[in-house]
Amino acid sequence: MPQIPTQRIIEKLDEFLSKNDYESAREHLLYWLKESENMGDNRAALLICNELMGLCRKLGEGENALMFVERALRTIKQMNIENNVGAATTYLNSATVYKAFGKADEAIPLFEKAKSIYETNLSQDDARLGGLYNNMALALVDLERFEDALSLYEKAIAVMATLKNKEPEQAITYLNMASAAEAQYGLEDGAEKIAEYTEKAQALLDIGKERLDGEYAFACEKCATVFGYYGYFYYENELKERSRRIYEGA
Image (cartoon, rainbow, N blue to C red; front, side, top):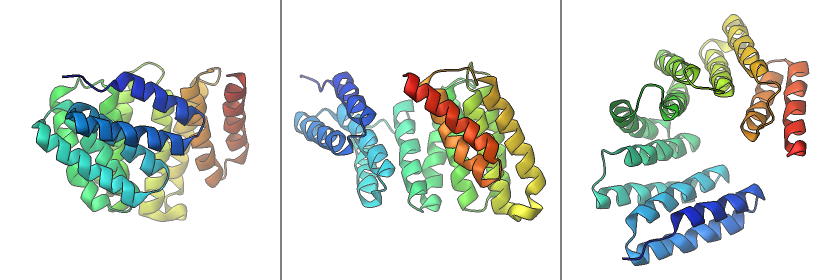
């Protein structure tokens, strides 16, 4: 049976996204989702549903994102792959959608399923584990389960610390920890912890200050506003300048 050309689909999607052409990206994915379902290619349909839920989340389209979550979870059951790593990635993506649209309580069971599968099947230095721990912790903060969140943030940092050039990811996690401390204690009572976490994040970002890759530029851009929020205006501008230099150089 002929299969959907998933690699070419993703390459074309990346081309649209690189131009911020979100409507073309949506049309592209919806076309191939219909083709996948018509051809009975559940593997491709699952991949495309994951991309669509991510796109809709990025665009703030909660109803559409949740629709593709349901379609993806239904496809997993049809494929009878509930306990493999690919399914776990879908659980993680689905949980992230729930969290993004104010449904953290519904996200946690999916995070737990992904966590169980990842921890059973992946090595302890796999970056996917770090991403899972970080995203699950964000949902736990929403539910005011601060100690559980802190434990997962620490696990995320431990995973990323074993990998090369993952200092920006560690920095983002430390800034998430600062936000969690603020949520738990308030700005005044949490000031010491917030300062500790932001200083650690700055030190990690400065390790790569000569980097010229897009991954580092994105991290600088993402972290800059958080530093600005906590009053580190000079460093906020420095990170924005690093990001600008990289993007313009590219």
